[in-house]
Image 1 (cartoon, rainbow, N blue to C red):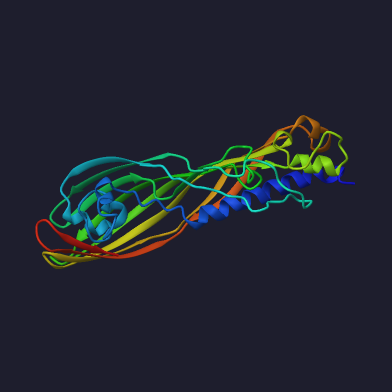
Image 2: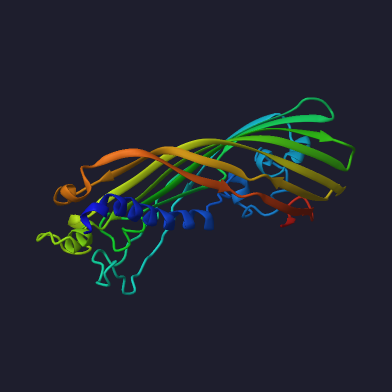
Length: 303
């Protein structure tokens, strides 16, 4: 009998649907937009340029080059995605119905704030708040890939104080601490049409959007890490930067809300919310950059 196993099958289906968004999250969710000024040079030479407050994030050693200043900026990210189906099928081998294509790109605002101040001739302080990692995609609830993902959103806020020390006229070193808040929402549809069809419910038809259930997992967490930097000035016009940022581990704790269609309540029980958790790690990064000023108008940067 399938009936007794449906509550467990529901949870299992939910987990399978959530696995795909997490694979996407890990594939490419780094946010490069740390500086409005840096956008003009495609963020090249980030660890060596040290010309604005974003050096708190990119290479804290560069703080020794900056005056006292406060900066604020906002980037608007508007991705455009396209999906085309190639013979999707459900768990019993039949076709999955739904919208054949959909743009899941979601507009996101990415703000940043920086404050820098020299303490003395050798020591400088910096403070930054920005988003280092994030992802936002949202599809219609009736799109053909709804059993994999509907809404996948990860928001992080990184709070980063840092200090830089000028060893001599050529070398400076930097160190920062990161307190990172992460908030995630992951949702997908549940194919109760197919489950009801297998259980012999007359009105149930496989993979029908109107008969779907829905799973939404939300959670948040604080994680902690650090960043290190080295800046070496070869000449007044040439410098190199080396920067490292540690990985940060998050264990998101929150709720998993299941919405069950009326016809499936005898099989799986009423809609409910239960505790849920998921692990996300923002990866460590290592960058090496070069900056060379050709004249007062032109410079060459490389990573």
